[in-house]
Image 1 (cartoon, helix red, strand yellow):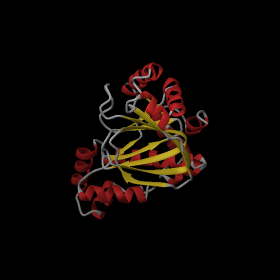
Image 2 (cartoon, helix red, strand yellow):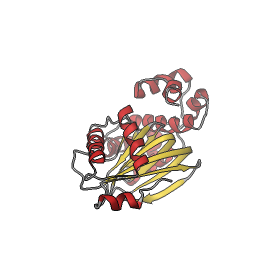
Image 3 (cartoon, helix red, strand yellow):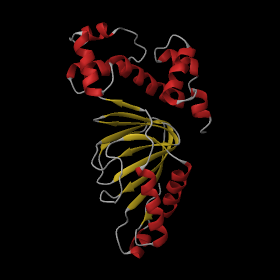
Image 4 (cartoon, one colour):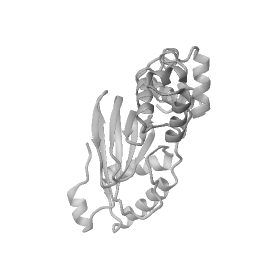
Length: 259
């Protein structure tokens, strides 16, 4: 792990506005739910993270990141070996930062800023070179393009039971009527709950779950055909078509082009 150096902090004379941490984790490592007083940009330099909050889950593939605002309770599961670079930004820092959690693409410029900040350990506004880097960092974070890798969580108990079942059985091809009976609700009620509480229809929520589960399996090295079957698709071509609609490219290129 890399942490801020005390002599750098003392030399600046003020508390830093950005701290940094680099850490490697083995496959399956679980970081228990916790919260910070600082905003976090958690960048997956290698490997895949599954970030869980009360609002929903996010999958963070290699060379992407998740933004976690200060005070948001979150836990992290490492899918395979993971190398994380985290920047902690002071909660009172100036800038139009994202107000809620989101998975984001990391531009080449932001990636180099993250790497440089990790090298420095901290950023002080009072140090001219660091202050300029800080300004560019905030500008980059403020304009981060979100990517559709969120799985929002319903709050109603019946919808939550349905969501938990589907997470445990992503290949389940049952109708919403069958699921409704399982959780003691009508199909119409269950559809209404999912749409109201997640912004997605039941079918769209299940498709998003399958996409995120597929990313986990692909990151672990599973073949595309096997993954397609494990998340409930009858053919590899149907799975690849869904993947391309969601992320703009094929599974092989999505991971292979970033390695």
